[in-house]
Length: 182
Image (cartoon, rainbow, N blue to C red; front, side, top):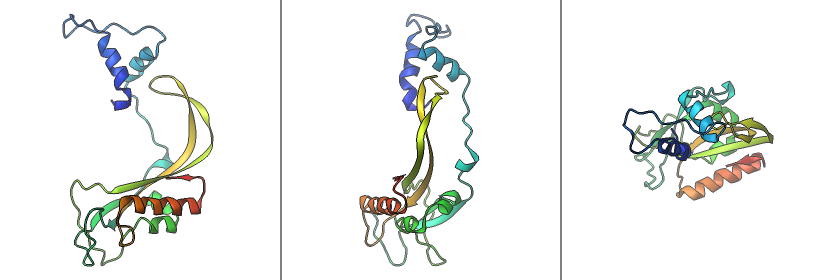
């Protein structure tokens, strides 16, 4: 279970008498409480279905220079990373250019197991949101309609540090659409 529900999980565990046997079931939480709603939904193992327009589609391979490594002309430190075709199609070329991708036959790059590139998440919020019930706790919250795209990015000769590259991506995204959030 995700960390964000750790307190509810802990509360369920503490309902059980500490002197009880290991196999004894815990008593039910109070009726109508958030803890009862969580327990009911948690026991069912909720499955979330992603919207079709939210699925990443095919993954494209791009090459980046990782931060903290020397940028060599021969491409010795370059890394191959994945980039969703959905994000590639939706994002403007000026935003993608600021991600410092290297493409083409001479891009090179190594696939390094366990390497995780820096990622920028660009979100476009639309509307004010609609009241929705949480599938886990049953509490109402405002669900804002949005589209978001995740894009890996790397260093360049002019932007060798992650914060500089992130700022360049943010400025390019805001120049394309002021509603974007990076």
